[in-house]
Length: 246
Ligand code: ADP
Ligand code: MG
Image (cartoon, rainbow, N blue to C red; front, side):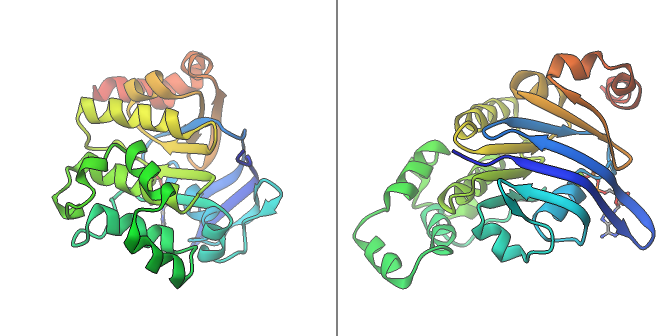
């Protein structure tokens, strides 16, 4: 079972500009949490702070372990994985090779040699989970946009990340790809804790278990989809805005 994420008074300041402004955030073990909010709300910066990419003050604990102040690689080894807004797979390597490299991060050379005799169970399982078993020998560069995002999620699975922080994984996806991604996130959560940054309200209504709304670096609202949608402050700054765009 995964640990939960407990953030207290998180602050990130860039040259005097406060991007994350005293955020408290609890994500229960196994939750599928959506983190939403207008552009510039501080969503990516929050994930950057938790994964050691930017300096932050306050506290961000995963289970019992404080993450702030640790380096990026240590945080990965503690079981915290993230994806970026732009997919970061090795395009010139196969799907299987991408997964092997991710798995190899926590393994010695003997495991890498052994794998030549077959695919390790966790890699085979990840291939099934992300729906790319029949593409395993294809170059990652030949995958569709959505499939690259799934491969990235698969790389987190074989790293055995227990907390997955996904930055806009369905951006640019077709409706079918979104549905498949939602099903994937449902399958992955439970055993693992998942935080998804996402703008798309239809996708959120369909798949979010809980929602946190960020606005100008602060938590504006939090709760179930219904609670957040009924919150007048959310309607004003976010849903109203989104409705106008639609
Ligand atoms: P979101 O992901 O919610 O769209 P970000 O976390 O990317 O928002 O950005 C929050 C705010 O912090 C924005 O105003 C952005 O311009 C600013 N910001 C992000 N990264 C940096 C940086 N490295 N230096 C200065 N300002 C930054
Ligand atoms: Mg962002």
